[in-house]
Amino acid sequence: MHEPPTIRGYASWATRIAELARAVEHLEGVAAELGVAASDEGGWHGQLFDKLRPQVEREAVLVAAVCGGTNTGKSLIANALVGLPLSRSIQEASRTRHPVASVPAGLLARCDPGELFPGFTVRIWSDDDDAIDPSAEHRLIVRPETTGRQPERLVILDTPDIDGTLQDNWQRAELVRNAADLLVAVLTQQKYNDAAVCEFFTDAARAGKLVVVIFNMLEWPAQRGRLPGWLETFTTRTGVRPAAVYAIPWDREAAEAAAPRFHEIFGRDEGEAAVPPLSGAELVARLAESDFDRIKLRAMEGSLRVVVDPESGLPAWLAGFEATAEAWGRAREQLAEGCSVELELPAVPRELVWREVWAWLEPKRSRLDLAVSGFYRFVGGWLAEAGRRVGLLAEPDAKATDYAAEELSALKTALGDFLDRLDILARDNPKLEAVLGPLLASGDRGAWFAELAARHAAMPLVSADYTAFVRGELDRFEQESPGTVRLILTALNLGAVVRPAVTVGLGLAGAAAVPPAAAAAGGLSVLVHQVGDVVVGAAASLAGEGAIEATSAGIKPLLERLFAGWAAERGDLLAATIRDVVLGDAVELVEARAAAGRRPEVAEAGRLVAELAADLPEEEVAA
Ligand SMILES: Nc1nc2c(ncn2[C@@H]2O[C@H](COP(=O)(O)OP(=O)(O)OP(=O)(O)O)[C@@H](O)[C@H]2O)c(=O)[nH]1
Ligand SMILES: [Mg+2]
Image 1: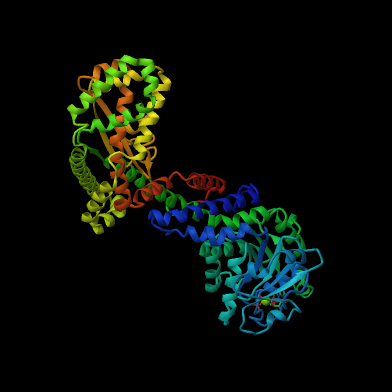
Image 2: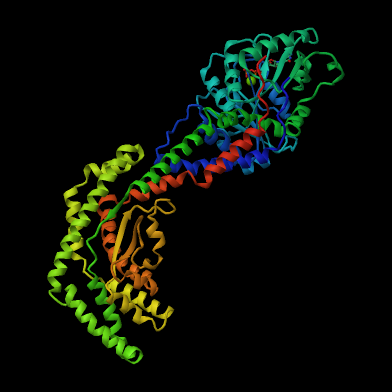
């Protein structure tokens, strides 16, 4: 006979199942978004959400239903188990028309029998004729049990037959079977091999219902020897693995007294005689006490096996989820690596930067006069001269206009490069195609370039941000190196030229592809900031005759930052345009999907599934 599963306690399973359902529910919201196939070939979803979860969410109640062919003594047995007349036991066949449930009154006060038995209209029992009312309505007659004899968490039902002429009866029996944890299969010599009976229990076995077999109306002990053969036929046809087998001898007196005796049948009959038969009350006590956890676990076992099946269950779905999230992760990496362009700006108009430095120096002039007196006068004169040379003082507007035109053309080239890269990425990666394809296909490129030009035209040559940035940098430098202001002047005077290189890319947080310059350019934080997911990085190199002096004077980093900051502001304009008019929230979308695989629910669901699977008893290998 079947070995019971290891008893770990119903409560621990119930908790895990509830947690698992919660985790999966969270992931499902994301799964649709990620495009994870909603494959449920194995039916794990229905088992988890429709079978297991409702069970664990309500009070742990054991529902035992007496089922079987017509006129086999079901009502007699149900009444004996309950110890009260539930439903009339009659000689004619197919007389029980509605299931009758004996529910402990205390339990009835806490739980709604309508929820335990979907599909039925609940009626409170008035007498044992209720169950034989020929009404077409699917009724569930509830008899509150007030004697206290019936265990508090046990519900016992008598059910209509499953093989008579009335189809309504079968339907009602099936509804009860689906809601029950334990089926008491009443079989007789005539019915143990009946097609309809076997079909009913085949479905029960498939759903993993625990079945206790009772052979009734036996010539006793004459037919004892026939039982193993009947049982073998029944279990082979149905796939039922009985948790226990009992036999009830044909006994008119016992039947009339509603007190049948249950003889437990073990594999062979040796030693059986020594075990006294049980009364209905004793059998019930055994079910509710020592068998409760085992029965509940067994009732869930079938559903649970479906859920934890590595091939067709939740693990397969989780693997699909992770694989899809990983594919989004790769798409994200590709986007970060592939989407970065060099913005090659025309030589930075250094006189503009100088003008900012000069403006910063102005209010300090008297202090400088005192501090550096002659030097300052020398520098002042030199600057005027240098200014004339580089055109700072001559036709500044014309120069600015030239610069702006060159700059716009550089920005447009970079935008074109950027769009080309997006095209390539979308072609290479189906996930990126899904997100970027529609943007690129339907976008009006002419309008994008026009928008870039409009934004560029509206941008001042020297922004308030830049002015503030320069002042901040200079103040900081002066504070860190008091008395070295003259060095700034020296370097500028000597004509150091700074060539910043600006990289505009999709700096996804944490991605290796964040332009290294952006990460290094800490001093540019005012300007080089994250704009959505777009990072503008700037690096600079110092060249020209003043480079060595600037380096030795220790102001190289300062100068680099000042010039790079200027260029970065241009890069920022490009980045913002790309984000606002081309990409929209596409990058955030990719980022969010790539992050889905790292959601804690993924690991949690994996852990719970593994734990639940480990608790399942080894599956019996069919002999
Ligand atoms: N002598 C004797 N009569 C029995 C025994 N088991 C059942 N009966 C009788 O058989 C008849 C049918 O029993 P029920 O309990 O009504 O059978 P059922 O399976 O509920 O029948 P339906 O609900 O009509 O399908 C009744 O008259 C019972 O008294 C038994 O072991 N010995
Ligand atoms: Mg009956």
